[in-house]
Amino acid sequence: MSIRTAQHRVLSTLNLDGTRRWIRPTLAPGRHWSRRRLVGWLLIAVFVTLPRMTVGGRQAVLFDLARREFTLFGATLYATDTLLLLLFLIALFLGIFLLTALYGRVWCGWGCPQTVYLEFVFRPLERLIEGKARQQEALDQQLVPWRRLVKWLAFLVISFTLSNVFLAYFVPVDTVLQWASRPPTEHPQGFAVVAVVTALMMVDFAWFREQMCVVACPYARLQSVLVDRQSLLVAYDAGRGEPRGKLRKAEELSLGTAPARGDCVDCDACVRTCPTGLDIRDGFQLECIACAQCADACDAVMAKVHKPAGLIRYTSQAELERTGQARPRLAALRTRTVLYPTAICVVAGVLAWAIASRGTAEVTLLRGVGAPFTVQSSGEIHNLAKLRIDNHSGADRQYHLDVEGAADLRLVAPQNPWPVARGGTKTQNVFIVAPAGAIHGKRKVHVRVRDGATYDVVHSFTLLGPN
Ligand code: SF4
Ligand code: SF4
Image (tube, rainbow, N blue to C red; front, side, top):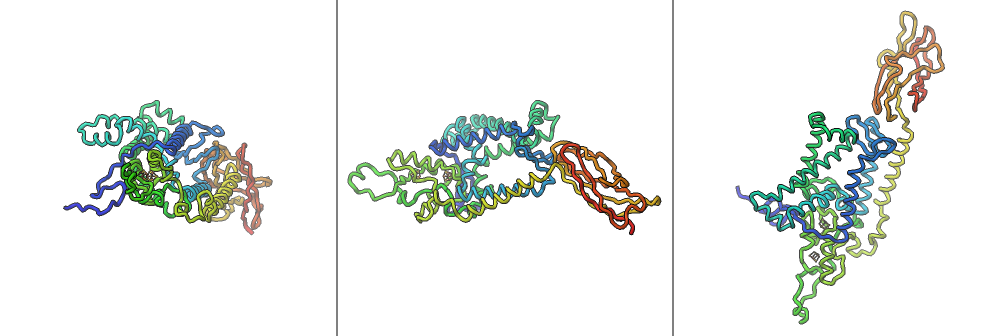
């Protein structure tokens, strides 16, 4: 079978014959890179220390899947809080839309864990052990590239450590620390999670790398609809840079025979440093993660050729095309940048109100299924009710059930007081028993549910009886 080659490059990370083009970006330590590194290290510090932080005596952030509880800085949502979780997700997505409308893919270049860990943990370690891009390429030819083996071992140690930290977002941190000090056979499920996450990190950071941004990440695919002409992006100023050309010889310049050229000296420094293998001079590309490494590389070149910095810079399409009506600093007010914050305020307001008014339990009292009432041979009238309690109090509770203000009525339940675990939901059938002749048609009663601490509410219920 013959292999056909493409006429033009289809993807920045593919060769013309369809094989993977390995990207080994050169380092361009400019001002953007220094700031990104600072932000990246801060984010790593937050990620590592957050599981150890507590708010109100509870872990600050914990997605406890076993208990089906989600704790975020003192507020706990349970699996039964579907509406609250939905509102939270809507607010989160609207926030992402707003961030993208204003700052384009700045999240990808500055905050995404994929970029942060690859560019500021794994790649620096790779350069330290394997050397620069050329030395790394030379290792490809070696039969036993021991430096690469050392690198993989270092990657494995880091991935395993990060996997344990990751686990502490889903299992209480004290449990994770306890597991870490005991053999895996005592906690096979936790160990399996750590092993799988470690393996995924190894595959991602040692092999898949920029492919995540280029072909896999759904956020990247949404860029074209989330940004507009005023959104921030990293772009090449073609008006200033073109026509590009190599540096001219001094004699050529002194004779005045050199053709008039733009500022781009066609050195390819911006291409060699790009972590997704792009040439930014080809225009806006979905694979660009707005990391500005090309801007740093180009600024260094401009300094050498005594030209002003900023041939590649953070800008917007509108500013670049000099439309005059939308410079980035003035372009914050647009339809989408007004609509998104408005929607976020509304959703966040409803969410805050719902959490504040939620109470420590949700009690539902419904008529039981089947006959609405039964009359016993003794003449007693039994009404069946279905009682459901969602315990949101953050502690295990015992709920006491009584009929209020009706001495002739009795509430009969399988369990009273009724234990409901923290975050748990329980349903049981209860009978409200009335003496013969105590109900004619309908009778309204009040059922009091209290946990002796934070919940004490009277619920109305209508008893039915013979007419
Ligand atoms: S083109 Fe520039 S900003 Fe975009 S990913 Fe490459 S280096 Fe980063
Ligand atoms: S680094 Fe600057 S000067 Fe060099 S090729 Fe890129 S845009 Fe042109």
